[in-house]
Each structure stands twice: as structure tokens, then as C-alpha cells.
Amino acid sequence: MSLAATALFALAALAAAPITVDALIKNVDKHHDKTVTVVGRVADYSEKTSKRGNPYITFLLRGKSETANVFLQGRLKKSLKNGDQVEVTGTFRKEKKVGERTFKNEIDATAEKSKPDNIKSAKK
Image (cartoon, rainbow, N blue to C red; front, side):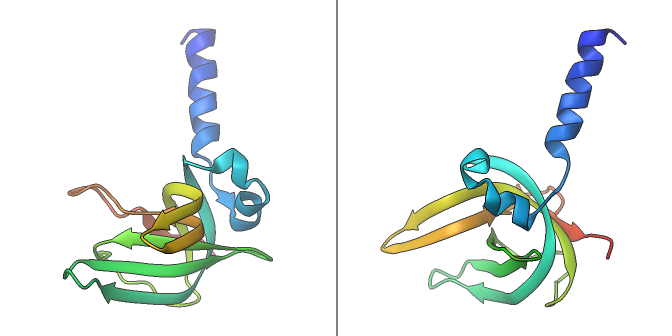
């Protein structure tokens, strides 16, 4: 493998490395509108259905001292429960407006149809 290909592979591996919730929130501008993989604990887990009949999930992803909001459309193949340690991959936005509501520090973990869930169990 050439030196350039090796360097490119190493950079891709670093970009995909999971970060903590605390590291994410400490650097919101760096991560805004980017795909992130974040490790933390589930809190306030809720499965809901919109007025239009679309299922969605919300929960808090807690780190040692910081918290991020997680949203995803649809349902997970394996439900979560509060206290689970998970790895969440999705698009992070430091602020998102939906109608009159504003959501801060949110990871949209909606997976593409027929793709695996963007949330998986992490080692404790």
C-alpha cells in the first residue's frame, strides 16, 4: 500500500472513532452539521408517534457532565432502556429549528431504509 493510501486510511479511521458526549459538547462548532459517533448512557428514552402517524424515538445521551439529545425516525430493531451504554452515529447539529421549536445539541440517528440501526450497544 502506498504512503498516501495508508495516510488516507488512517485519517478515515480517526474520523470514525467514537467520542464522548463531553468531547462533543465541548466542541459543538467543530462537530456542527457533521456525522459523529458518540458513546454515552441512555436517559429519558421514549418511543412516540407523530400526529401524522410516523413513529420516532427520542432520548438523552449522557456523558460524565454533559448531555446531548438523540432523535431518530422509525423504530429500533432492539429497543433500548434507560441506563444502557450505547454508541450513536448520526448528524450532529448544535441548533435545529422545527416549526416554532428549537432543539439544541441534537444527534439525528435516523438510519437509511434497509440499513442497520445507527445505535448499538457499547461495552460498559
